[in-house]
Amino acid sequence: MLPPSALRRVVLYNMRAFATQAVEGFTGSVGNTPLIHLKTLSERTGCSIFGKAEFQNPGGSIKDRAAVGVVRDAEARGLIKPGGTVVEGTAGNTGIGLAHVCGSRGYRCVIFMPDTQSQEKIDLLRMLGAEVYPVPAVPYDDPKNYNHQAKAYAEQLENAIWTDQFDNTANAHAHYISTGPEIWEQTQGQIDGFICSTGTGGTLAGVGKYLKEKSQGKTQVWLADPPGSVLYAYVSSGGKLAKRSGSSITEGIGQGRVTANLETFVNDLDGALHIPDEQSIAMVYELLATEGLYVGASSALNVVAAVELAQKLGKGSRVVTVLCDGAYRYQSRLFSKKWLESKGLYDAIPEHLKKYAVLD
Image 1 (cartoon, rainbow, N blue to C red):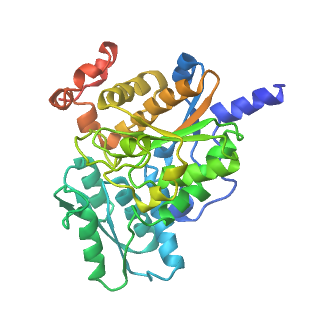
Image 2: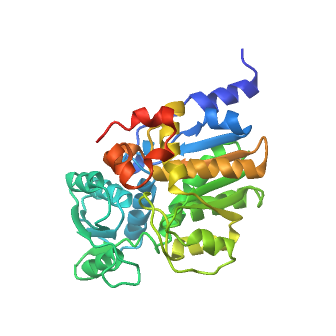
């Protein structure tokens, strides 16, 4: 018989708990994702680093939670009735989650998205029944920004909502009542740090608020930021918003402004880290080779940041991040030698891992 401490480790590291009864449709199956102990990175740092396996949500990403949250909120407030239309401006994953939710609840789904997004995402949205309108990628203050186009489209329709994922705080609340409590329970309240990147700000704000409350402020919550985003500078400077410049290979994360979701928590952040694309792409390949995890660049960025935060917090620290989605939505880019070379990133991959770049 294993002692209780060993049994807890077995449950935490090796077994996934399943619901004891059937759930109701797609929306009932969102959440309760595993927390994965990243063994190799933990051993290397002398810390315990965990990734919340959000790619195991039924729609394939953490954005399933936001999609369910904003639609349920609209229903509860009487903003949409059966047969209505859900409209959103999204870089991809929220749209995919919304397409699933709409399909399960009988709504029409219309998505406006930047034309810089991967073809895999666009194709999947259309296969899920969504109407997709790729539009030029322009700054938020441009009236032709995909978010403004989504809002204008929804306003023309009867029985329609623009879910407004960036500034609708039902997004952050969805993480406050689900993702945060799950992480707290899965770590048995033993968590020194949480860090993730942010697009809408919903995950970071919702999870961060819950963990700060439960730990009475002991858990540090940090923001991870890709190139081309202003949030690292904003947090590090104490609230000075710089002009956005540069770009990143990551999709759906980074921002040129403080969204309403992020605004609910930004002043409670303990810090921010800037993560170069070179480190993110190298981690995509390392996680595949050492952990068997096939994740996208934003997930890899989060893991790079988790390692750096763990090193800052010291030996023995316990740090959690989120594995946002799988790599299959980006594989034509992330595993293409030609594409990686065009971005100057192929040589960022360790030599012994280049064998995984099998696409031309």
